[in-house]
Amino acid sequence: MDIFEIDGRPPRLMAQLLEVWERSVRATHLFLSDAELARIKVFVPTALRDVPHLVTAERESGRPVAFLGADGHRLEMLFLSPEERGRGLGRALLTYAIQRYGVNELTVNEQNPEAVGFYAHMGFHVYQRTEQDGQGAPYPLLYMRTRRPPPNEKG
Image (cartoon, rainbow, N blue to C red):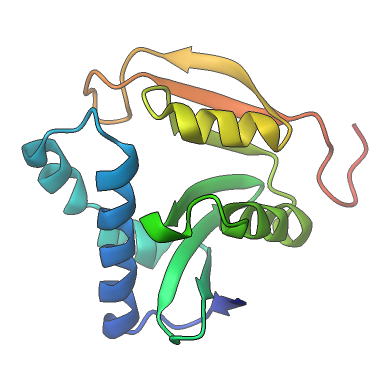
């Protein structure tokens, strides 16, 4: 597996990442209807374009199979192709973000228990909960952080 930090955001890559996003969400966000998924999908290209740090992971195929986005010390997104789940790729990407960017906070859908469990296993704990997502939809969010200070910070 190769991990790449993305400088440019070429349309072909953005289309591939959108495909990874949709396949990941369909496998893990079972609480979303097709209509809700379509509504949210419209915002993903902008999020991919605007996130300061975009990192992809590729296997031998040369196509991305996972990606993450980070902004400051916050993980903004982490999505894996369904066939990559449970193979250590999520751990590798999150570890990369922690070491490279000092990621120590994230937000996750409460209704995605596998993701919540993964982040808890990686040392994150819930410090806040909301009843709705950022668009006001009835999808509770958990705000998580790790007790580990980011690199070069004391805490």
